[in-house]
Length: 504
Ligand SMILES: Cc1cc2nc3c(=O)[nH]c(=O)nc-3n(C[C@H](O)[C@H](O)[C@H](O)COP(=O)(O)OP(=O)(O)OC[C@H]3O[C@@H](n4cnc5c(N)ncnc54)[C@H](O)[C@@H]3O)c2cc1C
Ligand code: SF4
Image (cartoon, rainbow, N blue to C red; front, side, top):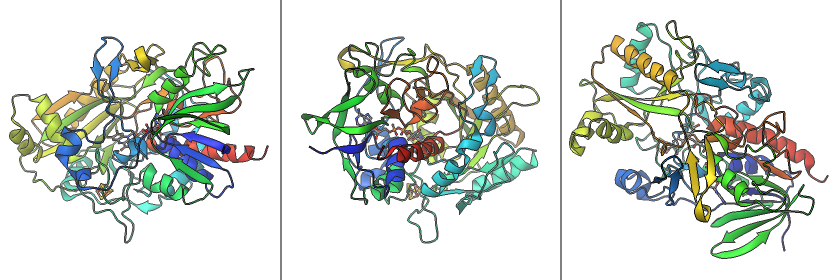
């Protein structure tokens, strides 16, 4: 029987980055993943296979707890987790995001650590994930101790022109930091099938390419795929985990380590803790606060597709431009509203058709060739009644009442006014429903008080001595920016803490 220093469950940004940080530390690490590697195949970039047939999407159903309706979640079970499919936008959270802020619909709580604590880890994570960016364009950006590791991606000519028009109208568009291998001699070809697709060339800065593969070069770090974590087992006192029951290729077994790190993503990490309920923890492991699964967040999102007959389809990587002018409010609305960022071109046709259902597929594709496509993203405020629960036979139920919709509507109005100012007339917008859970977070928040948080500031569960959670679950607030870099930075911070426990 093998014994490990650490078992890490899940190979997404949280688990993958942690494994990477433990390489060459001497630690014996077992990295578990329920899925497999996504093969490099033609279907990676095939719109029909990826978008229509959902080739890589999790096949299971989750349930909307309010209505009982089943839905297929926008989540991915494979080595690298959701990062295999992401748009690789890598902004740091703003310094103010770590502080408490009153919104009209509730409080965005303070984090137990400030931006300063995470700053060096942000810098390290940007290097690992090949982040390209530039400072001095975004008025909301926090300070940095070092420049971006790689220069910003050039805007495609259409968005360069749009950016100049926005600047002329007094706005501050900026190059959003992006993690792709666009280095000298790098593998990225800046294709149109990035955001929402796996990279056929392994050129995306995802957790598989940048972390899991390099980490497993260390003979002390072993990856086992097709291994579903079912239940964590505790000792008699209930203070320690003594084993993990898994189902591996159809066979049940129990694995052992000194320390266990759950990194299954905000929903599945909760599900694992709830499934692990026992006599000492009837409401689920690490749940003395009663908060396991609560405060589920996933951003409040809409698409805004602005038609521009003059635009010619350039069919290249689009996700390079963002706007934070309304992040903290505006002259007319003095509350945080959120972020605007250009989205991948190929999704536009689908969203356009949903917003204008009378269009045929060919018509929507033709219109999407002539549009500017913007993702409108606002903070999803934490609410304990928004939560992840287990249903019959261990199925996942999600209760979600969007909180922060008023500010999101204001952001949409500001975005539309901005676009009208520079000449756009016809726009289609669509609000994203419960299925859009790509930025899922919260559920096991970290904090300084065991009564009001599940994890301590180093993501160790308050209730158990050798159980950590290192994925998007720890966020006490969602902020209004893409989460991956912050998940990675905290994983690196926790890794430093875990390395300190080796041999003790
Ligand atoms: C289409 C799309 C676009 C996105 N674009 C961006 C972007 O541009 N920028 C950004 O910052 N973020 C983006 N995101 C979000 C980002 O991908 C996630 O926030 C991030 O990857 C979450 O990492 P995680 O470690 O929390 O969890 P996950 O990525 O969910 O990883 C969890 C892992 O655990 C595995 N697992 C789950 N349960 C078990 C179990 N019981 N046993 C074993 N293994 C298990 C899963 O298979 C998975 O590999 C996007 C997401 C999507 C889907
Ligand atoms: S843009 Fe680059 S990183 Fe993204 S899928 Fe295309 S080749 Fe891969």
